[in-house]
Structure formats: structure tokens, C-alpha cells
Length: 264
Ligand SMILES: [Fe+2]
Image 1 (tube, rainbow, N blue to C red):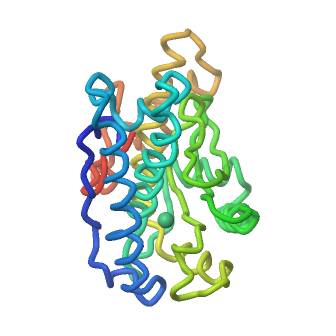
Image 2 (image 1 turned 180 degrees about the vertical axis):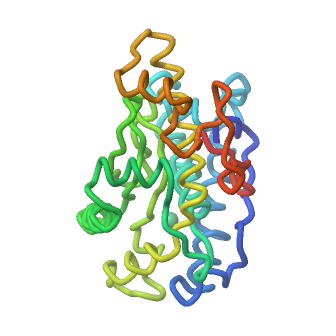
């Protein structure tokens, strides 16, 4: 997403359209991906067609400071660029049932630290998603200060990218679940929780934490916790889940480039 730029393309799903069944039906996924998400991509390209200088900006850059965009373009980018960003993160954060895996390592530690337990996190993001009035998203995001937060947005808005790095998103527009669940958003969210691809979320978390540490280093704002971690040779916790400053990634957790989108 950091590198993704004009002309934007409709990214293929990282699983078959029926891969999320029975939690999310093939019909729902196909309609959602092939028609709705694709329409956002097409409209974003259309909006930027007359702005060659802005075509060099990545999707992330376009959405990070929309106030800097020409007034005539701003709404189209927020709506359609946001639609592209939100849907790509949503689809890329899912995996077929049966490959369910809980988060582990540094991400699990952070979830427990910031939400109490993994179960508490699940309950809180579901509650947040239930509270979204009408259409929007619930997100797990990494604040630039290093804490995890659950936030919600309306419409196709993304969280404030200047302040946080989105790690996970759930689409609670009715189009995401109405075909299968009608108005039963709660049932859809229970199903969604079983499909989260925690490995990809962990990669985004790791890359986000590298940015957090780099920012602290730039500003000389090391915390006592950072210094303690440095003294033990790990910048990302005690499992070697770091990847910078000479720390080697654990083989089973080695980060990879998403096949669906370039994550921050
Ligand atoms: Fe959607």
C-alpha cells in the first residue's frame, strides 16, 4: 500500500472465492471483491486521470494528507482511495477456515498488554464493530507511540495515517454480509473472527514497530523498555521477532511480501 500507485489495479484474492466458506459465502466474496472493491479501484483511477502530478503519489500518501489535495479531487480520493485501502486490507487479512492460528510472539504479547487477553481483544473489536452506525469499519491499528488501539471509521474513511498504522480491518457495510447473514452483523463478526490471518497481521505489526523504533531513534526518545530490550539483544520482545539491528527473524515468523497488497 505504501508503494501502490496510479494506475491502481484490482488485486486478486489470496484465496479462492469459495475459500472463506462457510463463514463467508462464495457469492458474498465474489460480489464484494469483483464488483464493489473493483468499482472503487476504477473510480479512483478515473478521479486521478486528469492529475498527472498526483499520479506519482502512493495510495498511502494520497490518504495520509487529503487536506493537501485539490478541493475538486479530495472527496473522490477519500471515498474511492479509502475504498481501495479498506477493502485490500480487509480481504488480505483473511484466510480459509482450518488454517486458523492464534497470534503469537511479540504481537500476542502486545495484544495481552494493551487489551488484557486475546479473548478480551476479540470481544472489544467485535463490540466496536457492532457499534459502527450504518456503514464503516473496525480496525486494529498501531499508534505511532507503539500501543495497539481499536478504532472505528465511517463510510470508506481510513484511520488517521499520520498517527497510526492499520494492521487489521473488518468491513461492516451491509454489502459485506447481507447476502448471507441479512441483518445479523453479530453472526458475521463471529465468523470473521475465525478467519483472521494472524500471520499477516503479525508482519504488519513487526514492520510498524520498526517504524516506531526508527522514529524514537531519530528523536532520541528511547524508553527504559527499549533500552532493556536492546540489552537483551531484542528490539521486538524476547522471541527474536524483530528483523532489524542485527536481530534475526525467527524462521517460522519471517516476514514476507503480501501476495495481495504491499503493507506498510
Ligand atoms: Fe466492502
